[in-house]
Length: 220
Image 1 (cartoon, one colour):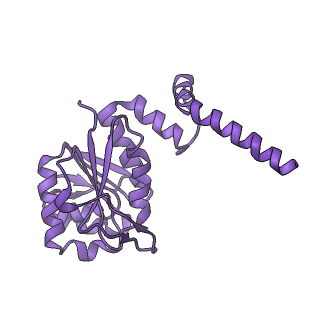
Image 2 (tube, rainbow, N blue to C red; image 1 turned 90 degrees about the horizontal axis):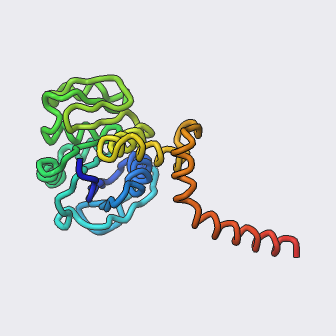
């Protein structure tokens, strides 16, 4: 499969920030990936906890992308009835190789008619609502159904992003990213550890110099 060229992350008011920022940490580490964060306007979008994210472009500026990703959160209730947002999802899902979500972002995919006939998951407290959109609810951390990848609640978004990395680039790349962000157990194969250490070597040299200087100042 062709490596990811563009990933579109969709923003709406009252989203859950970890639904977005967890997967984003994986996405930006994918080789040659360009990650867009798109919203209705260029103004900062506030999450449910008050942390605001500045979009990189608007819905109108969003180009066709290989991966469409939708977070969840309390704002899903209003977003499901937002005709502009639903139209954006439908438009870009038709062009994307992968249509994905974390947490209750799958309800937005459902409201856009993008999960009918597919197995899907979401946050455990909202799993019952997927059937209304013609989806087959499945209580799992990550569910892959055709080119639809949905995740369970909040932290499962990281698992979704790692699954996308594995599907597009292969298990080795996904494992290197997992180890680099230290998600789960740090144990891995010597080959993967060496690859990650090579990638971090330049930064570690610079960090070593900074630590040496900071320690010198502390002791002076």
